[in-house]
Image (spheres, rainbow, N blue to C red):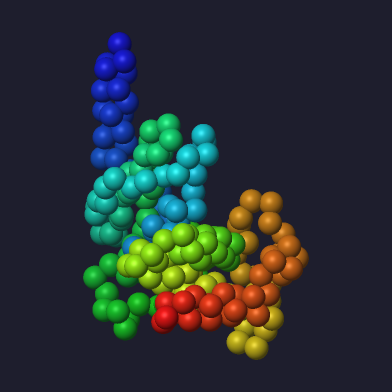
Length: 192
């Protein structure tokens, strides 16, 4: 009975993946890295981490769509994420608008990922540590795009979709000076 249930689950997952690109209004992503950052900030209903096991390019009405099926590392639950990648697919690096606002991430996602990478870098070494530090720097630089050039706090209209986060809470938690310190600390550790 268990084997039959597993096969049925796998068949349903394949069906979902095969038609996922037909969804209306998929999330917009501005890079593959952003897609994976989005996945890294999402959790299964059981609280487990989601891990991508495939990366499928499809087209819907001429638009390139990225379909990323994932499994939960704890309960093996299945989730399928769909991204509109027309912003960067087959574009030269200099033609991609790197300052475009993301539809999938908010300031809190960038902050959470950046600090997670900093913490993970402390307990790792070598190439893995460098990758964590580079990801932290990259996340904080993305976060700083939401801050005015001479401003202490993010734009009032920056994305704050994160659950139960109010703008004033973000202002208290992530002043620009704290993010600048984090970036400088990561760069110094990366250079040493």
